[in-house]
Amino acid sequence: MAMHRITFTLNGARERVEVPSNQTLLQLLRERLALTGTKNGCTAGECGACTVLWNGEPVNSCLVLAVECDGTEVVTVEGLAHDRQLDPVQTALLEAGGVQCGFCTPGVLLSARALLDRNPRPSDYEIRDALTGNLCRCTGYLRIIEAVKAAARAAEPA
Amino acid sequence: MLTAHPGLPEFDYIKPTTLPEASQFLAEHAGEARPFLGGTDTFVRLRDGAWKDKYLVDVKHLDGMQTLAFDPAAGLTVGAAVNMNRVIAAPEVQAHYPLLAEAAHTVASYQLRTRATLVGNACNASPAGDTVGAGLVLNAELLIFGVDGGRRAPLATFFRGPGKTTLRPGDIVTAIHYPLPPAGHAGRYLKLGRNALGDLAIVGVTALGYRDPAAPSGYRFRLALASVAPMPLRPVQAEALLSDQPLSEAGLQAAAEAAAAAATPIDDVRGGAEYRRLMVRNLTRQALRDVWQRLG
Image (cartoon, each protein chain N blue to C red):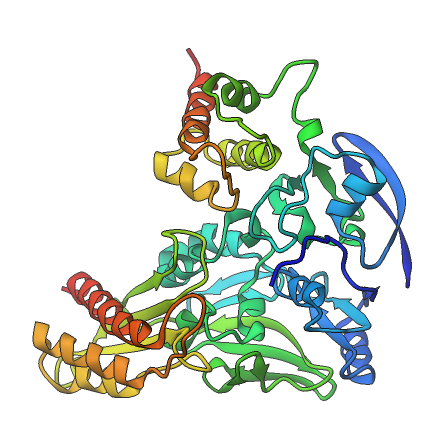
């Protein structure tokens, strides 16, 4: 099977790796680069546990080939906090109690971050719509939705 | 079928630099190579073992694939690699083709639509394709590059069965073109899923209507049904009823019954055939009401 040398930006740092044709971005992150914050759920683009930001847009990393990431930028949940400060959506999710088992949490955080980046003041419907692809079997979603609203409020100028 | 293992079977990833090169490779490896766009269907099929291709040919970077262009005289052309989120957010689409944005927005989830494409939705040839109905009622055409050069193919005659199209080895769909919709048209896509958002269609009904003084009713309607026949379907008898007789609530009901009669659904895990037929009737009636109301 063909191997490909790729260079991409991962959580702000340059990565150079050699990947086989059939390796997914999810496998590259978890099995090669040991970034296990990104979870492997359904491997079919249904559950959203493997969501990462790819050139700023959320994507299911189980449905992206590693080789396709050459020259692109990837942000995982490990890259969300900056300067030892949690991202506002991380803080809000903690404070709202929107985390139980935690398996969906990395994907939820990245979908929420991307939503607030493109729409800083989303309605309840827009939040639900943006999180459609992130299944959670613990929380019943209400606290997650509250957390996204709180993160949006926290970002508004006082 | 879902598998717990994340691995894809072995294949070679090919990234040609030109369309002729890509087309020639696909023709030379007929039956063991396929072009791919976002992979949202392709990777799932490979993982499940339904497809066993030796080569996946990435065509997203080739000429024109990333272009979304609106020409006020000719219509909208969406390159094969333009993802659905970009289509939905495009001001030209929102202004002139709101039906297309509405339909695309019902596809799966935001992060899946980062990868999913309109052309991929057509080429997948699923009877449930959410954006195919909009293409049918808008008289869309596919732009195809093949070993003999370029050609255009109407979406209406593109499908041959579930998962089957008229594409030949070496063919690459480079874009989908939507002619200008009828002036003053209104459209609606109603989708029944197991959830309000994000599911595959149990039934999908696309309706487009516009005023036409030449029609006996003063209106013409186009309808398309998803997930209730081996291929996406235009229930032409229902459409004829709506243009031939003055519009009324009873007329909408009769057209909805005719649409249900045109459907040939199957029983599957998402819904029974009889349920689907009834839902075709109900969703068609609702979609027609919405469109008629907006036409005024």
